[in-house]
Amino acid sequence: MPGNTFGSFFKLTTFGESHGVAIGGIIDGCPAGIKIDLATIQKELDRRKPGQSAIVTQRKESDEVVFKSGIFEGITTGTPIAFEIKNKDAKSKDYSHIKDVYRPSHADFTYQKKYGHRDYRGGGRSSARETASRVVAGALAKQVLRSVSFHAFTFSVGNLSLVQPVEEIDFSLTEKSITRCPDPNLASQMEEYIKKVRKKGDTVGGVVACVIKNVPVGLGEPVFDKLHAELGKAMLSINAVKGFEIGSGFEGTKMLGSQHNDAILKNERTGSNYSGGVQGGISNGMPIYFKVAFKPVATLMQDQKSIDVHQKEAQVKGKGRHDPCVVPRAVPIVEAMAALVILDQLLLHQARKEFEF
Image (tube, rainbow, N blue to C red; front, side):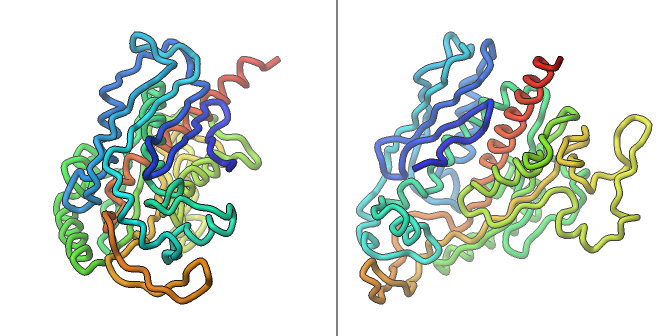
């Protein structure tokens, strides 16, 4: 199965399945001599782990990461960094009833048709549990990118959405709510709505927004490897993501060019930031701003019609432990993938400068 590695200079290869012995990864290309705070990496994992609140899956995993190589006495050595996270609370029997049945909107059907064999326990490799490894790598990347800051937050859940401009958002409030929405009043509404949806055995989607500050000018490789294209690929590789937009996004289509253009000022900043910090595929020094759309979780605590592997009609019964809304736990994943992209592009940019002649 190809496609398990992300990045060109700073590379992450992940391994493992939802109900396997462990998940983990290997990071290659991390510069030597970087002081690593392991507690901070664990804190990032804790933001993503299951069982952290009443509105997420109640699977109980400590998600404690153990580093196997590449870090000595708290400092990176420049060699591959291997890490592992044990699976301790997998209840595989919860999935025996869908061994031969395809769950609607899951990867069951496509995996079976592509590979002829699949791990049906919790979705196997297609499970969002794989994203824990991305959070580890992203947390490490952040520590290399000390001057760059990443601020992801819940922008919307269902029809409940933030209305204030991104420039006015207080990012320090994001972690104050279990929904990770920086507006306290809206956060409470989102929490109650998710609980209400859960009681009905249903699920709901939403949007995670992200602001990256202090990105240097010049990152991005035209023509096909534009910075926003790399960010888009990173975000669309996350489970349940169905959309990506940067800057003004789709709303920009409703504006005139005279309204949308970002005027360049004498200090090399722009008067507005409808471009979202990227112009011509290259970072322009302004904050990078984008949104990521997450669909409703496909597993419902309701019966659904489907077919089995013999193409006979079947009924999928809701069972197991699942998130009614993935958005709150997706916030650190979005930040992690953004950090992987920015560090990878920065290392590529530096390599080009070193070899200029």
